Length: 213
Image (cartoon, rainbow, N blue to C red; front, side, top):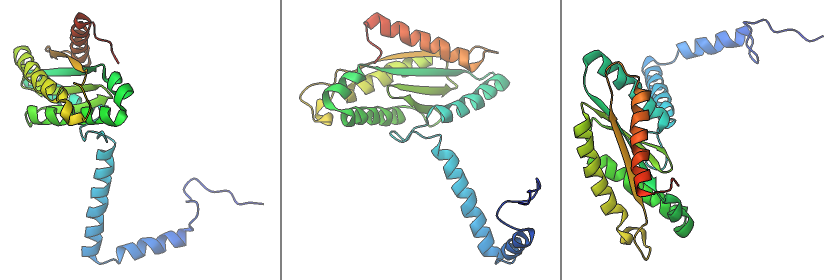
């Protein structure tokens, strides 16, 4: 008849074995133990960070971006500081992937990510949300300022994108972009601000007759 495990009894080790391992750990040189603890903490930090970073661009992914949204929403609510969000959606990226391969499409996305990093402030939070979507959190920024940022970024992005020499293809990359932005209203849930920015982005997209691909 097999023995039943009690709720507090660990599988695989007897109480004596666990005590022996605990004692061995406690007898470790304090300096070595401190180093090991620091290395473990750093590893945990890196593992947590890894799940919030987009592999392709090195930008935050949706999960990481949402963490900052929550933080700055609370800060804006507490201090009444202006806060805006911006959505950038690439038009016709699928045509690049279909015509020249995903490797070229990835290069375009990486170039856009780098341009967004360079073209925004250190305080701004840039994220790659999905294949053709980027989002930017703009602290201490009102609607008029967000509009200026959008115009400046679009000019820089199109200059990079339409340089066919960068992609080693015989013609300009047939990509444009649609940008929407919105300033958070007082007491407004940040998700509603994002929805308003997304609505504005789709209005821009429809006005150009751009397909969402």
